[in-house]
Length: 417
Ligand SMILES: [Zn+2]
Image 1: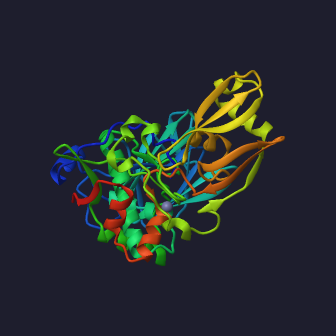
Image 2: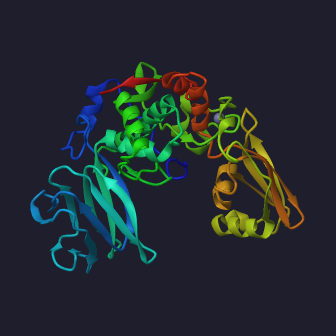
Image 3: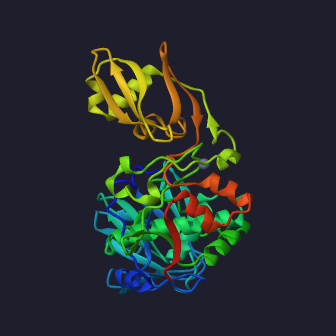
């Protein structure tokens, strides 16, 4: 998960009990779940974004319905079927059946539906999805696919994709609570939203059902924590908040407030010390040095930020502010015409490549034609929960609820259904 698309969200929603939550989110029919239906409407997850063609298949008959749920046709079981937009007005099935531009696909026996997308001249399998699929034409000749899915099934898919298979049971439970909280927070922002979340790193990675041994462990963690979300007390009200998490904080979390006023809530104030993530694999706990050419940095910054053009050739890069725990918060670029501009280090990181510059906790200096990033600590934005820290604490015998209270100060888990 990264925070670039999740910031600028509106403020935390209020929930005081299940009834209020359920009233805010009218329940709709549930499909293809082995779990008890959740008393919330389905989550609406964008699983394919502007693709030219999709392919669907299920072990049972798939019915095709219009927006009024009228049945328009059906697809036989175990038969891959290609869908493509035609003339900005119809969706064509295997060059035969044609339907309106906004349809629902539902497996009749509540079996999951396998979805593939055509991208870069080849078919790519997305995953196997519980619930139903909405397929809609956008941008005149592209398709969006939105999975309407029970929240608990969605959470299971997210935990399977976002947690590591080696995670301790308590860490999987913690991840389930955090991912459920993240989902319901976004679902309650706008109960009538057509899409609650994307299925990518911009929100939470989601690839549908996972039915292997890891998937079964994840299912146990999700079922064990069913309906549990994190809240904090705001006056006499319990409020949800955006439960950010990232792979490894490297030493301390960073405050979320600089990234959006709605994140200025007690559980996201940051500066939580953590070296439990030292067990993170590879260079996720400590990284660098990384060398990048000054010319490429200049080019990437000016391509994205107008104010970067005004300072001329970059002559100095320095940390201009830090969090209370010492993490760089903003960087200052000084140019050949003696002007400067400051940018959040997290934005610099995303401009230069978030997998190369793994975190914002680093030392930086210009060395001739290059820029050296060294003493790098952690992987990810460092907001909220440290996932490898959670695993480290679980291995030391801590329980999921206590771990989450540690990383989200003043928050507590409550069961809302
Ligand atoms: Zn950590």
